[in-house]
Amino acid sequence: MFNTFSAMLLAGTVLVAAPVMAQEITVWDWKSGDPAAAAYYEKAKTDFEAAHSGVTIKYVMQPLDQYYTLLGTALSSNAGPDLFLMNGGAQAKARIPALLKLNDKVADLEKTVVGWPEFTGADGGIYAIPLSIQGFVIYYNKKLYKDAGLDPENPPKTWADLTKVCAAIKAKGAVPCFSMGNKEGYGAEFWFSEMAANQWTAQQQQDFADGKLKWSSPQVKAILQSWVDANKAGWFQDGPNSTTKFMDEYESFMRGEAANTIGLISDVAHWKQFDDFLGADNDGVFRMPSPTVAADKKEGDPMLPVSGGIGYGINKASANADLALEFARELASPAPMQIFFSDTGAIASNTGVDTTKVESQAAKSILGWLKTYGVPTAHANATAKELEEWHRQSQLLLNGDATVDAAAARMDAVQADARK
Image (cartoon, rainbow, N blue to C red; front, top):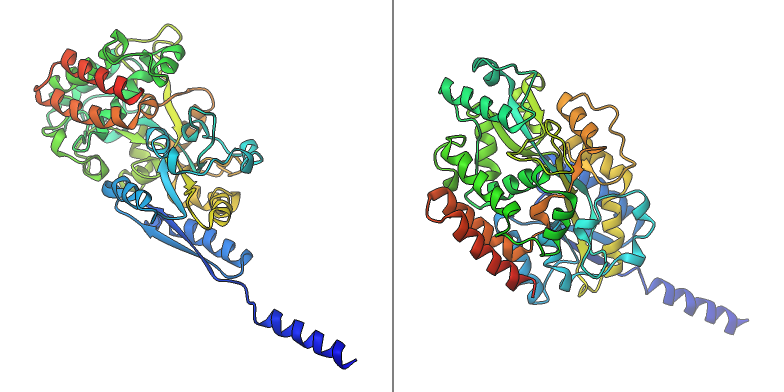
């Protein structure tokens, strides 16, 4: 009996002496410090830590303009975070070598979460869990339209319509037609995808994604030419190459210093933010037309570039990869995602989020368009090297320091090198 009691006591001692090991999951992003997203991040953290005794979530917010440089340095030195946020498309795909392949780990999520293609590699592997759906639309200031003698309830549907709008805004002389920020080259990214949405067929979109449609092709050069022509026509304010897109361009628009801006449908510079600053009744939205219309598109009924927006990937070198994956799933789950939509205005990737109670007319329009008007976001299907060079070439084009032919030739060379 003594031996039995001693054995039980020893077992109890062992159990007491082996508490749950504390584990810290480090999460990098550029959003967790945003007050609008605070409740979303706190909800995911609180719920996860409550369900995982001894686990602590540590958010590390990095500056957006340095984010990918800092991330690359950390990953290359094996000091990277367990989990990190990425933009879908080129930025996510450029980091596939550092990411854990998730296919067999997210099969159940594919039924309720959308936006996967922008986080899928050429091998068919899924490398991140999407949080949002992203896209581009034109937001416009209804008061400025009215001041210029335009009908604020009848926004442009064709390129001819848009040309007339910009002519009227320019004639009024109070503000430019578009607020444009291209200091980092992002303005050119948005313009590129807006034009491709209507000027390219579905096959041409796929050919560009596959690297088969060259920048020197007539279809791509037409977009470069439209970028130059819009600037020459005086559609943009002075100095777009010295104006940051995030947030100088958008702050200018919100102050009423431009009639239009190419904005997002999620995260920032979108319907919720513009409703708050301009007033919901003054915040208009339309799908951007283009100079020409592809054979499989319809004149006067423009399409909308849409893609997986942002998502979290797991560092395959992480010692806590399994827990990091579980937390990525938590971040994309319905309860936090509902807060994400309600508080930030992001169009959530989780289809279980209820959007029926939204009151914004701009949001209602966008949510309705997503059902039938979505096409690929062309620039997201370029390589990271192409985007970096397009940033540079777009600035040269606006400055008049490069011709369309020269820019296209340089882009061809970068495209060929990037896809070797």
